[in-house]
Image (tube, rainbow, N blue to C red; front, top):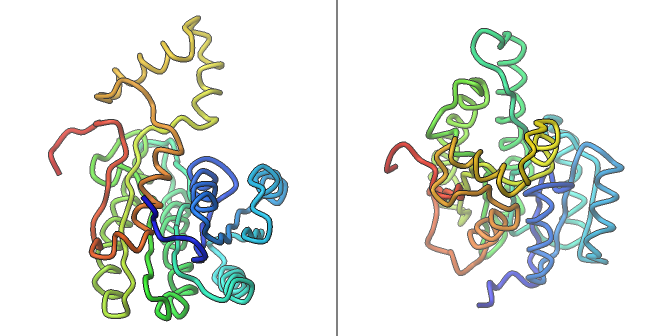
Length: 261
């Protein structure tokens, strides 16, 4: 199916690795023009070299917590490609700490990163998105937003706030023709899990170790997800073919869940 993304411009934050990189690749495969940013210049350059996007790919070093830098990168993308039709708010990380270990600074840092990572790009892109005939924002979130994990207490709380914010944004921006949705991911097989497998020294193959981890975490499909599996959901929500979908979230988590919502 043609997702009608050819020659449309999409901004992707945190596009130098993992889900962000997979999303950029999927968008380029669909014929879209992509502007992506990250904080590490070397990783960004390496990612760009692996994509081969030519003149349909624009990269820039940018910290999503810096509103001025985000605004400048967004302006550069619009000037380069002539429009902004989609935004993927993907930049972020998890903080593995429980309540006792989490300091006031941890809470401030986590909330600033998660909320700035959505609000700064939305504010910067909004004038351009409003001018598009099919504008879409996708916030990359996590099932932690619905199923908090005590070992990730600050991240879980921040993720829940972003899910709530996404719903509010979908209502606020609907009159301008801007759709806002979320993709909530579970455990995704990125470099961190390969490193943890190596550090565990369990003697199990990576596949068997994954299966044990999946069983422990209650993942129905019995394995970790892949970054491209998340990217497919993101790209689908960006598509004009999803023009009547807003204010919702899609779980890409292998069936992990302690409830039906």
